[in-house]
Image (cartoon, rainbow, N blue to C red; front, top):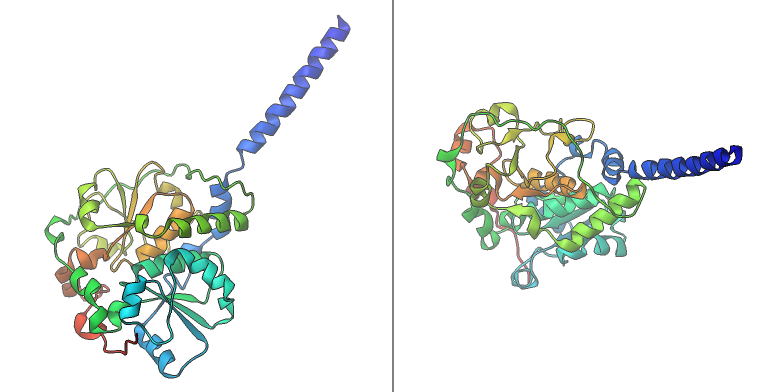
Length: 324
């Protein structure tokens, strides 16, 4: 009888040991590890990391070897006209191209696209990996020459101006992080796996039009990434204000974002929201950046306010050289 008790105790001990191991394994939360590893990335300057076309032009004029220019537009558009010295690289190849060519040795790596929004998304992914010399060109090729300006010229709009509201949306209670599973256990390795995956997926799924954003505003979770005083002027119905560079890190309000909804992020131009969307998608959120931001919804109102970032064709579309 005594031996039976010992046997039972031994079996119970082994069971508890395995149960404890299983419990410890379940505590390995890749998203938490990654969120802590990224720290205040989303709240630290320069965020977003942008460069003006005038600065790129000056580098081209002086034949600066310290700037490397990557054009992610389709090959047909690149061949029609591009910046002298720019290299055409598919968005999905940005990471491999950067590393194969040891571009960390350059003072600046400028990434550009049609409007600056896709380039911002890619730049954010690269900078999360520590490639801090990468910047996106503001307004994309729209700011380089009239012949390449159509995306922004046609993108500005007042289409949703009358549908903006002043009633504040309800911020979600703090909850859980999304679940990601790369099979890695360190922040560095998890980040690398996630960035590689997102480059492979491409930027298309990370974008949303204002028409779709408004259509599903009641079921999405919409992040208004403006300062409070501008939020009070008028915003997308149900959208919730998050202060730029003061929220959305794990130590701040990241966990108030729901894991079971599409998160639409919008700013003035779509540049900053593209940086934010990349950060959130790395962490496993179904985040999308609103194309053209408020410029594509309430342009005249922004113009009237005077201190909101807007695209001005008369001053932002320049006449710089295009080569073939």
